[in-house]
Length: 140
Length: 192
Image: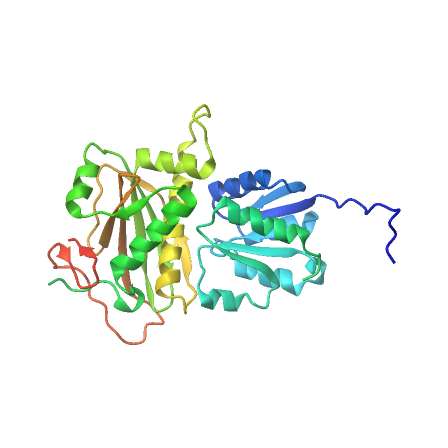
């Protein structure tokens, strides 16, 4: 039964984590975030998968945007660790990578990735994907 | 005829076509720039007066093949690409040199990734950035083949060196050494 008298609780702005070894790419994604009109809370950054795990361990993050080819720990390794830990079950995961090979897509198929964006990306694509991810439910 | 220093198996339908398509895709989608193939004569004209070039390289390994890919970009074109990518306005301060270098590295990363995704989609690949360097001239080094492109009427070159990787199953790969400059059968221009 729908209670029309009670307004729906306002969603907390979602926190995002951008993982890419390129500072200019992270800056571009942050700039696009500002153009989406989405209610965004904190935007965290990491230069590789290891740094990303440090952020995830210590902060609440709703959306993870990660590159694949990175030093120290790749995006695939990061996603495997995330998938293996129930704590991050509701984390929404998006890949933004130059590696658009079918082999790579198959490799990450079981890691609960919501969307696989292939670089080069346009700001419009990032906006559309983030809007869709923000509107989706929390559980993959 | 020159030897064929690049594996035809990952250069389909031709080396030049796949690589030029990758450059055009990256230029248009990430930098809002128009890219087109450019012959040697026009490339030489476009290079006139350019004395500082970014050389941004990537080491790639896709199992069957491994090697390097370098993007050679004039410094003024690199700055214009930075502006397009970052949204920097006329009144904004000039970017730190390391940021432009970072973007050139990402440019090489995107070109190499777009090329390998087209040419060898059945394989995953790893990419590792090389230090970005500045040079006074644009030229391939021994063993590299290269393509030349015009991006917003500025010169842009991509030099590739490839060799059989650990997962290579058969075809041998020529060295590229000893060949005269000219078009080989892959469509690439080989240089000494």
